[in-house]
Length: 336
Image (tube, rainbow, N blue to C red; front, side, top):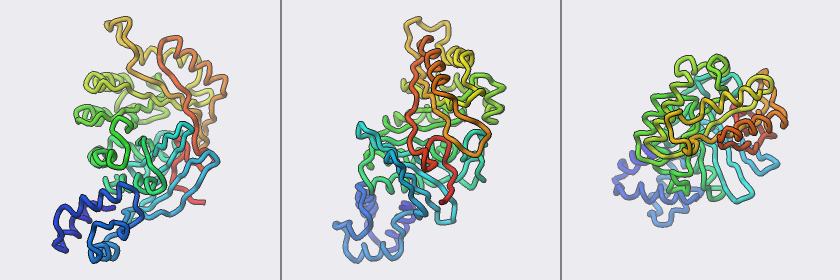
């Protein structure tokens, strides 16, 4: 719900300030509407139902994948589209992938969101309402800011939303914020007190290739970004996830894996037994309208082996929701 508008509405009806906390507490538990908030006066529940939409987002469409993934397409009150995803895992984890912007201004060439027209930053309430939508379906325990947009370009609202996520059931240590390498945002994130995780969309260790895939690299070169990530680790002592989408014939060769390992290795002055502060997630490419194709299983396995031989922790991400265009890089607010 629009928390600022909630405060205004309560004040306009001379309600005590503690009412906002009561209402938020009910919403965070996953109730469907004001009528279920039984510790509120009936007249207030009726007023809120009449004057204040229960969500700042309108659900436009919902799709369900064969693996249990759910993708929701929303519109903001001013008609801006965005998507969010609920991912269900066999170990009972329930993770949500939320958007921080409608569209994205950074135009990564392999990402469907980057090909959308950028609209605007989302408010903290619009971010929270993505989580609350799925909380009304079932309890949640993990959140990744890997949906539409660059979260560090909307950091004030992202952090305001993160402050409230534990009340929904998602602790700060189980919340990850992804970035293409926006250094001012990485520095701000390191300075704030919440123990949030940082994920870096890297995708190529070669500066020229990374600039081709991700134009933001011209502004913030990878070497400087990795230095900012190392400074983040020194401040927070939280291992950094590295996202690396596997593109056939583009960034998946063995020598490119060795280059990535060198880029992520500890400086030569570090103690030899120091573990890597990075963990690489290799992401099988999910089809979009871009000209790329995904790497073969054999190429991914060889790439993984090259990293592991250099003591870089690595996993291959389990693809969720590909059949409903809900997988990594596929969010583009399409209907149908």
